[in-house]
Length: 300
Image (tube, rainbow, N blue to C red; front, side, top):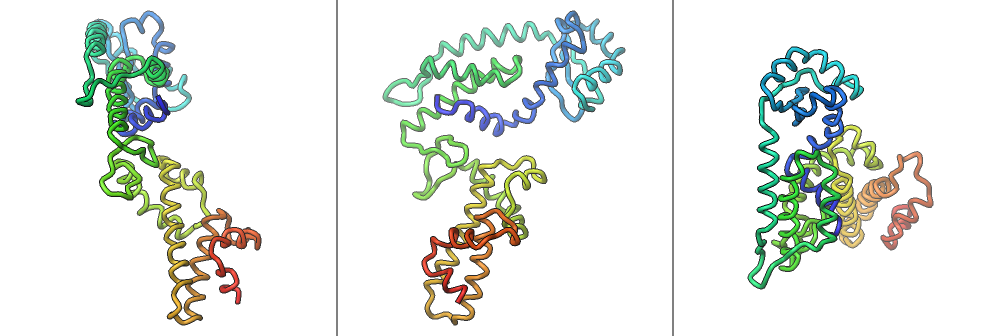
């Protein structure tokens, strides 16, 4: 399947699982800390607000583990290399029975027919099934059964959408149906772009030369593709202003040049990604070359 790994990332982000799955390597520390014997009776579930949630298959073990909680927390944080948890909540849960039930449910779901059109069935090819399995290795084992079912249904739905004429979103590549002829983004990404645009407009106004990595330091959840779309939108705004001003023959020439200099200056800084002292004449000529006559006019 085309870009399955990326589709998985998009799904995890939209479902709210991405932040939890990022901590999967920390959950794998549990067996080292608890020991192989205790690990047989326990399953680490999640880390939330510095609390590690652990399912325990035997109520007797719940009591003993609570007594050892402080020692386990210290060893866990030592293995991780930071203060990841400050509390452990042990939950008495027969996870063996639940896992068996989930496997049976998965088997039953895989035998069901997936109908997405009146003209026939849409199925995943063996190669697509293999790619999904590889992508699922990114998730903790105890999530995989549920995610496998969700992913397959999601990808089958995407295939159906493409057959029905859906286009790919410019940011996430997920298929969506256009509402208007010039639509380029799915509703989810469009909402994110609008939200980030409010922030990035001020960023580009104060530092037009700024690069993605510098912005990410302050806004760690900013996606590079969203950054690129927002930056392009800002640049297109300056481009339109330059072209409109160049074509306005009724405006006073002094005012025209003043407007063009300001718009061209910002456009160059955005395109070159260099601070003003670093801008060279060659940068200006190359970047403004797409506006015939502009360079001569502002330097006249």
